[in-house]
Length: 177
Image 1 (cartoon, one colour):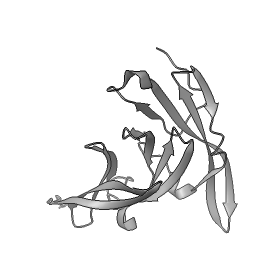
Image 2 (cartoon, rainbow, N blue to C red; image 1 turned 120 degrees about the vertical axis):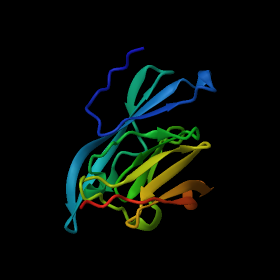
Image 3 (cartoon, rainbow, N blue to C red; image 1 turned 60 degrees about the vertical axis):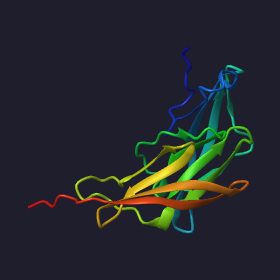
Image 4 (cartoon, one colour; image 1 turned 90 degrees about the vertical axis):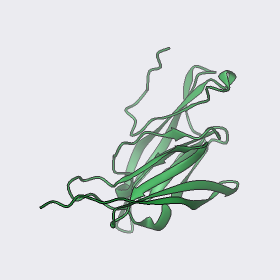
């Protein structure tokens, strides 16, 4: 099946459950529709474009018409969404995890653990990744000491989250001579 994406997205999230074929699939594309400045802070205003294989149509989220993200947080990285099987797609930003709930048609931001990204000196990238571990969103990052931290995201209440540190692995980083 071929699906045409209507505008150039900043990131694509695919919601698909191979255990539930009747679910079909959903594609979610956050799209910058406006850049504005508020109190000397640059803000990206997003829309979420949503494709459903059940309807075969694209629509713009009605409940999330002006979702705001700090511009520095929204710098492009590998900006692909991950799906945790709970009807949400997640994207890794610089200081937050952005999510979109495909059933409720709502979005939000979750602070990353400890708000301290480590930027690799030889690359202009943060050493962080999100993924899925046993059906839960995971967040891994390299610390300045060279340890690998792995965190799991738990939902406390409806749309309220907390991070639980799963493991810290000590790694030796090679030093340039």
